[in-house]
Image (tube, rainbow, N blue to C red):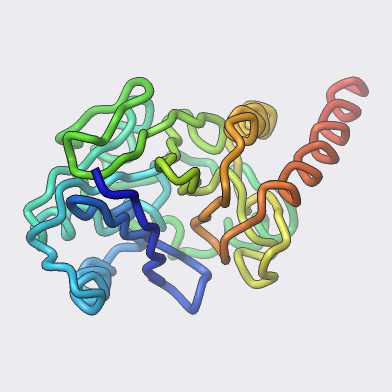
Length: 241
């Protein structure tokens, strides 16, 4: 099987919200952007020389509106099945992210007031229900879906044969992707300690690069240093409780 290439698909701004196109024997999409983004993602896939009807799978990394918002639309446009983790079925079936949002800092507190975060997306039912590590060879790429809970209970990442980790909101660039190359928490986490544990588990697999939902790719060594500092900070906070 040919090695998997990761192609970013900007959904909002240059890097503020990303979906991804994974190219192998057959193409796979990771994430579906905000509601109404399906046609834009479809057009960008075609611009990369890929027939959108060849897409074998759409993987949704988690149940937040900026990642699953156009999953149903993309399913109709491509005919590809949609994969999502069982623990985020509530948002997928209702079209609403689980609330309240739990901010990780000032950016999250400001964003939680944004009415666009509270709109309803078109619901969908995952065709492929993920409950554990799942190989994607049958869908034409040398990669695995890896459960990485914490950001939400059903968060997943995709790890390719080349060591590229398509990480959803496991980690982000600072300020919702505006500060490139600087690791930071995304604006929200359901469980920061659990998310950090998932991040460190993925780093232990020695990924070559982390491709994130918000911002440009991150270098693993820089993420490791950030994760070590964050672990010390969260440990001190828990000890004071």
